[in-house]
Length: 313
Length: 304
Image (cartoon, rainbow over all chains, first blue to last red; front, side, top):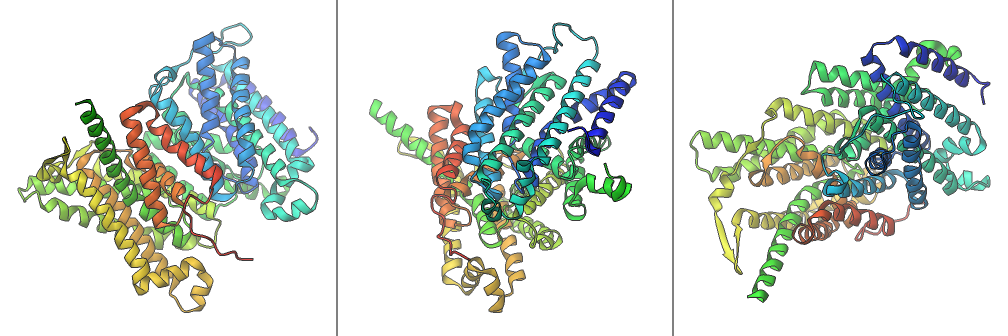
């Protein structure tokens, strides 16, 4: 599990980030927190994307994770970061596992649309339900870590970084197993995969569940970093679109790509918004089109070209 | 008296539902035509709608300020739809989509999502963030009393416009040479090319036609709403729901999908407002689960 280049790079990057974070100014720590929290969801979407599946509704699981944190906080006063993360991942993962029984039979735009429909059902419920915070959402109290309340954001940053990189290691490991290697095989030819003796439906169900657990965890971490949840920025279909956007931006090449892509997205968004508040969507949209047209492998493929195939991590 | 009020309530729901269905149909007809012919699920369709609404509202306001008669508003609505559809449709099809036809369906959806983001912001840059109110055409037509309830006439004309669009599409598809060519392309694009049909031209015209319908939906609804940013975001998922329920690529399907969703939503709004949005997408999800091709999808010829 630790003896390939990617794994070694992840361990090294984790060390550098955790030490560097202690000295970095607050705003940089914030950008990394948001970026890495989102990257967790992108990691899951990447697993689907490698199979050729695009979900235009993963905000459903992202939102479930975020709202699980909010409701636990309000109803039971749970503030521990690990309990919150666990709750988000378990709620979203359970929903994803159940929905997966249906979803595993869908492909292409039907897959995308069914996901959209399900996420909009949740959006419709939350927006119109007063006890779920309606359009305003909830504020979330500061997270505690195993009983102690941190003064700065640094401890939360370290936890998000470690969770993110651990997930990357696990997904990297999964992609190397036989069932993980089916990923691209299914995209290329489902019938051949069936003839080899594997169940395509089971493989897709597993991928889908993995992606929903990660999206739920991402939602939980995002809720904790932001300190609030609301339907417009957590569940609406535009959020799903944003997640897909970052997935394509990152590229499917490597489990590290989602983290780099998310960071680029955060920085791009912050600066685009500062430079031209009326035109930041325009800048994002144009970037998206450029990537689709000219860089189908995403940022990762650019890095590979820069480093030369040999040094690629 | 109690009986009377029940009838009135039912009539209100029915008319609200029909009006909402008509509006959904005009917008979704364009979406489903584009999907049927070109196999493109066009997220940017929401932007055509928003552009139509903004263009109409802007010029209705301008003309009214200049002291021109309010009846001009109806001309402006039609002109706005055509201008928006022709310009945006042509630029997008020729400038971007043309180069994507050989690529994966899902990638084309993503590209139209990128376009949607771009067009949303160009609206903000062109028209600003303040809402527009173009009530003049609506005020002109006044209100009528029917069956004990008062309705504004403008809303009722929406039903007529939707019927016109439906009949127009049916006539075009079934009674004209263009319709025959279109059906040939829908049935089998490659055989169509082999038979000498100018498929690129069919694609361009189809896309422009669909865009005009999207623009018309926005332009016609503009006088009844406050035209504000974020308009296209809600409409596009609603019209996705409509075309999915009816069956993607079918005009009759879009009509039935609009009726189902429009009337269900009207019932929800009056009887149980909490489920207003939920019910639309619950229907969409249920149809996708049990009949992914939609309730009334045309039977598909099996190809190898």
